[in-house]
Length: 175
Image (cartoon, rainbow, N blue to C red; front, top):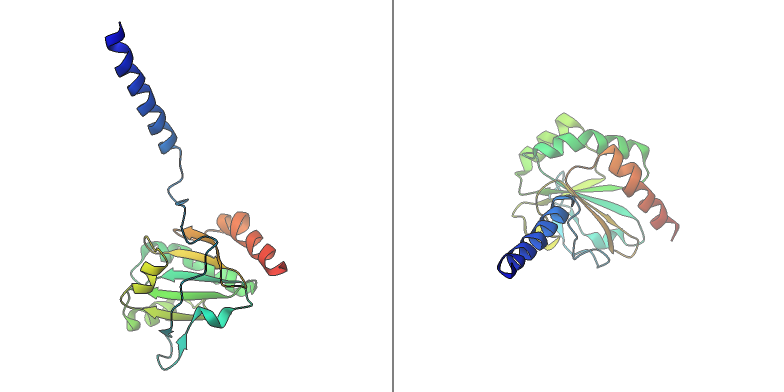
């Protein structure tokens, strides 16, 4: 009898871990950057490469950084949501064009509209690595002190805006 007890206990423990793991939301991957300063960068702007953008310019403002690319299928899914948000003028949205060719990024924004206050070019993906980008799109809410307060993995949806992002932005803007 004892010979079957130990394998049964091990099986039940493994089954419990599997059950818990299957119930987790893959979009809620904890980021080690939450509540940490946003990584610094200084990149050329997409529309005018003679101009540059750095998050330092945003100190004192709550803002969103949306990592996108012209080749990203999910970015096309979230684009109308970002366009709608930009029209509401609630929070500035800055783009980080990730591992993309400048011409492709410009063409994509010309065709679908440009929700971004500006977009910076991360052609080689190094800044994306600093931000812990798993894949595009990803969106960060950054507070007035330059601290990352939220990370959305995958497309921003009307639901994620309504339930999570906009309430957080409103709270941060009060501080």
